[in-house]
Length: 286
Image (cartoon, rainbow, N blue to C red; front, side):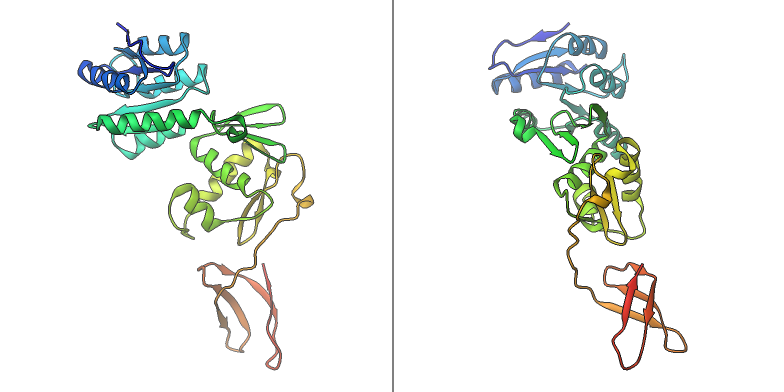
């Protein structure tokens, strides 16, 4: 049976939770904060409510007896792509979290949890949802990012992205006209420093090109990537590549001729040279 509180300024929340005690505590805490809360005791009832009524936020437990929690997330977002969903679950493994984020959930809270933290996160997510259109949309070179619905529109086509693809595209679009270095993208999208042995960035750029068109993103060899958009070819854009100071180690062969150039970033480049003992070394980095 679905239950509902009728207090609050129209900020409606659906809680899909089979544990009666948890559902009661969450409803009580959110009600005190001024939210209008509806609860569903199983997944199918929750899906029906999410399809038939409009909620600012859906809070969903993944461990439902009658339906798979991930299937419930996908079922809600397939009918309402802009629906904000927050996961509240005992599953705390990284794989479950990543799968949910890729499906577009806005937050993931593991059990046990503090009611005060839950309320604070709900308030934060709903404040973010209340952005003005000026803050909600990011438009560059024929592409429009909807920061609320987490979609991208190129021309007249709306394209669904995974959470990681969306963040990567947003980083590059915010730096439109400039080159995003591999180091910057690794740090801003994945949260760790650049590892030259991984190709995860290239994989995700390939996925974006597959969805948006290959010419949307230009490769700046040995530096990074630049978003140029679908309307204009990469060659028509003047890209700002900032000069970078690097330390250099030069390997030479037995005849004293240069062979390899190693930069401080630990990236190794092949190059051709004109080398004379009495002149400076001219490097053509490839």
